[in-house]
Image (cartoon, rainbow, N blue to C red; front, side):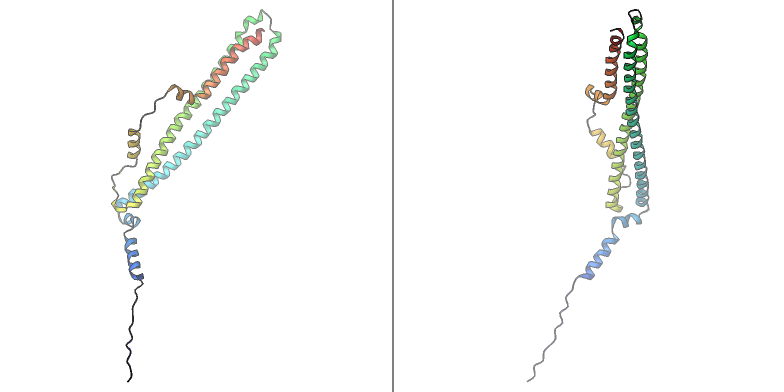
Length: 216
């Protein structure tokens, strides 16, 4: 008796079609796709990206200015010490020709030295003041740029659900209002004007020493 064997076909689903369908659905609802379909969000993203580029340019410009100011302060300090070296050398050379009568006029070269030193110190202090102001502006620009970058990143992640009324700079203002204001203590002021203080100390030492050199 012949046995009949039924052929059973087992269909194994690999899930590729379901995975492809889920990928298409997820790509259709991607935040960037939602932004491209929303005119308001797309316009806001373009405006913020343009503003972010302007922030980067302004930061680069301020960094260049700060480097230039630092270089100018260094050059003024070099001129200051070169002038002191020349003045002391001139005093030592001319001290041999001074007598008791001419020693009474010691204040003439010392007064000229003092005026020149004060003018150079004022120039250095002006450059230091500009450096501090530019550094404060640069710090503010960097803070605003970081806040704007966070908002752009949040917009790209949320897509159409992002609140269009959100302001990027509000984060900076909130941080500044919640932080404790740093007061300008004497130690902090001295650290900011350390270069000027050193130049004043050098001038205060050389001025009385010049009279001793001329009249000794």
